[in-house]
Each structure stands twice: as structure tokens, then as C-alpha cells.
Length: 355
Image 1 (cartoon, rainbow, N blue to C red):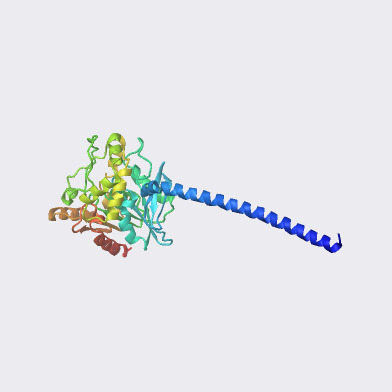
Image 2 (image 1 turned 60 degrees about the vertical axis):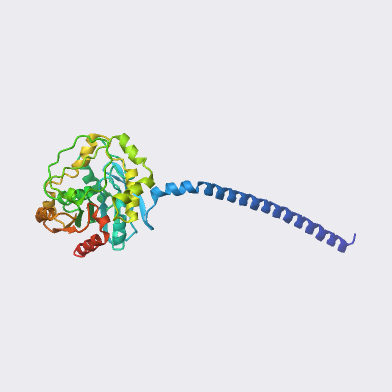
């Protein structure tokens, strides 16, 4: 074979081997691609199969865009909280909800304020995703929970706002920890002096979320019975979400659908006190006595609509405030920030501008 022929033969052989190797490589790659496509399709099928369940379960975690949630180890338990749209550098505001509610019960009001304030909404002990009550708890426990939350989160002079039981909580904090808050805002707390008489265990009845305005304002109204047996709590927790939403709309026709949505979740999540002793600790939170007169920070009370006689009594009781005032919200019942959101925001902003 001539030298030229040998060169041609070598080139031919090399070319053949090259193409064979590349054909094998291409086959391997095609097989890999097919395998990856099959795996991807399988994953998609699994996701599509589980999607309905994921959507249903996601309801318990659904909150407004850019909001987050977390936990803080506070006063011996985990306190769960929501953080509205971050507003770094803005004044911190902590909103403390009422009995059987959750942090998200503040949502419609928080949405109106979140551009101007850095808002945190904790679930109280025994509510939402926070840990339950313990047998060691007493009437000071919920007060200390909020105070410790402020310290653990390293908030400097937050504005404290509370509704109902939460209003009693921040009222007492304002009195007992005068240097903690920049301002105290109370939505429909009891005003005046009320003796604390722990109630005996209540019968297993379903608590109505909203009483009439007059009933809420009576000076003789005793602390609500807050004990349910574990069995009755489970029955409430097992109520269907749809039934709770329908019930919420029937009971609260003035509320935004968002308020009803989170009201329904709060009732499913509520695990409250399991024993009469724990219930007495919860009730002890509302032993406000002369706390209103001791608040040194600027303060505001918003009260539900009421008869002229009750309005007069409320205004008389509020005269003890050092740097505060009381305003009634026309047409609103106990959940006044739900019943009359626009008016509530207007009055709040007027007060907040003075700080």
C-alpha cells in the first residue's frame, strides 16, 4: 500500500470511529433526555394529583402578599406572629387580638396602616398557632407574653393596639410598664371598675362572636365565661370551613369577606384553656381595675356605638386618663374595626398624627 493510500485509510478509519462514538453519545443523550422527560412528566402528574389537597391545606397558611410569619420563644412558650408588609425604619406597631381571634383578625385594618407602620400581629397564647395555656399560668401571663415579645423582638417604643381582651392587655401594659410603649390604643375595652370574680366552668355552649352594642357596654357585664371542655373545643375545631364562613356572614353582615375568612379560621384554630384553672388565668387578664388612670403614654379608646346613658358612663370613666380620650364609633358593635373600618381608620390616623 502506498503512503497516500495508508493516509486515506487512516483518515477513513478515524472518521468511522469518530462518527460511531458520536452516534453512541447521541443515543445516550437521547436516552437521558427521554428519562428526564419521563421523570418530569411523573413529577407533574404527582403535583396535579396532589394539587387539590395542597390548595385546601394552603388555606391555613394564606395571608396577604408580602406578609410573612414566624415564631418567638416568649415567656416560656412559642408565640406565633404575622409580620405585615415590611416597613423598615418605620414606627413599629404591635396589634393584640381578642378572645378566640388570631393575629390575622386584624388584616383589613393592618392593610390600611402597613405603608406607614411596621406591623406585627401575634397569636395570643392558646390561640392560632401559638402554644397552649399551662397550669402555671395566671392573670399576669398574657400581659407578660406581650411585654416579653416586645423585648425578644428588640422593639423600641412600639405602639400597642389591642381589641377586647387584647385592649385590656395593652391597657394593663400601659399602666404596669409605663416606659414600654410610645402609645396605647384600645378598641372597645371595658372601662370603669369591675371586680374580678373567676367564673365556674361553663356549660358546653357555642360562643357567639358578636353581642349587641348595648350588651357589650353595660357596666354590670361580668367577664365572659371562657372555659370549654376539650371535647367541645374539638367539635368547634372540626366545624367545616364553609359552615363557619356562612355563619360568619350571617352573624356579621357589615364585615368584609376577608374579616369573615380569618374569623372562620380563628374558630377552627382556637384551642384556648383546657381546664377551669387555665380559664381563670385567661379571665384574670381583664382585671383592669384602675389601670386606665395609670397610663402615662398618649392613649386612645374607641368604643362601640351605645345608648346615650352608656355613652355618658363611658365618657365619665375615661376622664381618669392622663393623656387620652375616648371616642364612640357610630353604627359599630364590639368588633368596631370590622363593622366600621373606614371610620376606625380615620379616627386612628387622626390620633397617630399627634404622636
